[in-house]
Length: 316
Image (cartoon, rainbow, N blue to C red; front, top):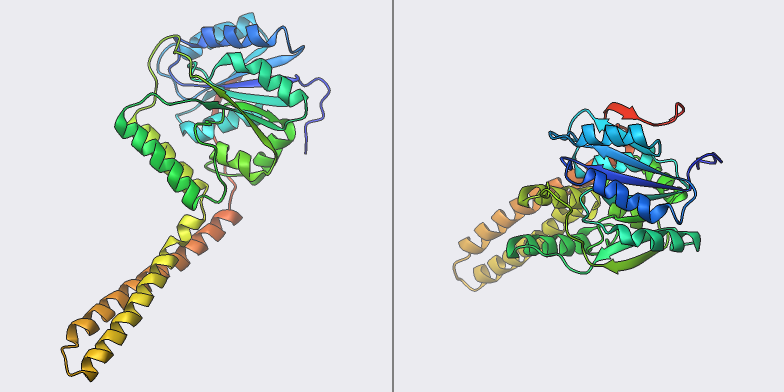
């Protein structure tokens, strides 16, 4: 059900953070500076994913000074998929903006996001012009996009991280999917709502270092591929088909060799070996399809557990 509360803010901004003591105040000030001339009512929701520095302390102080700033503190690190998505679900705005707290996403785009949303666009996403990273990370990122394009159930937009504005009905549609590992940028496309994009250059961080490294990005890419692709579970069935065809070819070769009075044992050995692998992949493929069906029927678990929340109304 859509939120029809007339007291709800027009726009909610969800800021995912972890160990961002050097950026928390700066990003809040930048977002407020962009929204105050444009939006009459708005809220900023920080969701902290088990920071070990002074991030929570700093945000609590901001909450005490400004009632529009809210804070959710997770009980542990729930990952880069679940925590930001949970924060989006807790927003009450008629439109929701999701962005990182480390200035990876440019606050300068917020007025254009709001303008296009007010004009009737349900989803507006920021797309980075380029990613400055080493050759290994660049290769892994390109490989991830290719795998998503090949096996994903729905296409994702390259270099769109989810930074953007979403209409309330888009958020509710994604919430209804009850996805336990929500790959949000793919779920946005899955809803079928129209998407517009805005290209931007990634701004420099105000301070601190990124929490991402090769292994966290690899984990994110693999979880995203697994969570947004049921076709991947059917891949063993395709391998089984190809191996089955190879088995028939080798059996045919063995029959021809036997008829010609030539050695046929190797042909038969290859046919038996390929046939065994074909049966194995067939079983794995059928098992994968069953797992996909089970996943569809059992999407029912909380994304995160909260330690505390600050400045939220009593009914939220």
